[in-house]
Length: 92
Image (cartoon, rainbow, N blue to C red; front, top):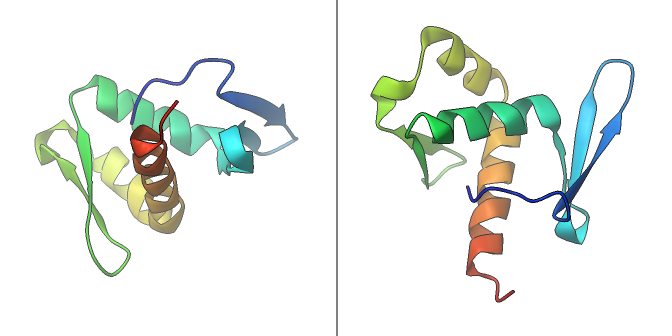
């Protein structure tokens, strides 16, 4: 995931969930986005795999809490990772 600038997304706050809207209208849970950014800051890279899975490498950066958090949000996390890969390939 590449670092996002404030022009790339807009946060919306509700009572329970904070959403972030990225360029093109893609919307994601800010809590998940911030966890993925934190993992990336700790040296993680994300690799998309088949059948809806993705891998975090090196896995040593993951705490047990990270693993549980990501497993509960696997589909949403994959969508964010796919979006970021697509945006990275897009001419700016």
